Image (cartoon, rainbow, N blue to C red; front, side, top):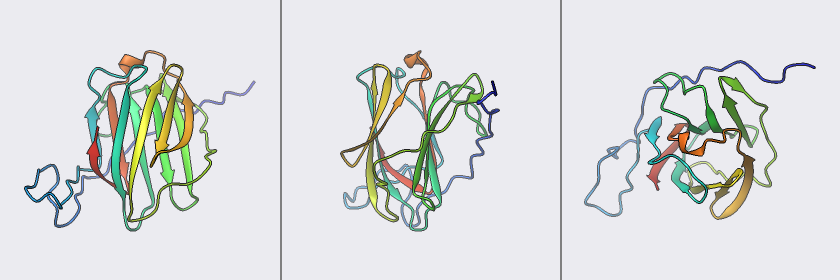
Length: 175
């Protein structure tokens, strides 16, 4: 039987960028000016994941988007690559309007899942992505609509303690 797992890919993180005319990571006294977080972003998930925990990403798609990635990892890895265990990697590709999902366990990537009922991301518009950690799966909603479920490949949920975001997206809030 052929081995369906692929070797570990490199996750090259481009230099950080900010949105012009808005200082990143600085609170403004003007409530009408949104706060934009630096992308690429890598930050801790306090206490790791557990059933019932939810992560919320508020963002804005770039005006000329190519793709963006979101990953939940076990540990922070290095500036060039995530650790060998990635519980969920989302790749949102605008050219072919696909949302790929996969996981990496012990440095080996599994097959990508592709089917989604709709493509919710529109260039230059905001979105709200909710990632629910449930028993046995992640449930992902965008703008209140369920997009997909992804079965856990990494079962030690508290070890999933880092969020990565990179690509053609600005992040305005994480919760």
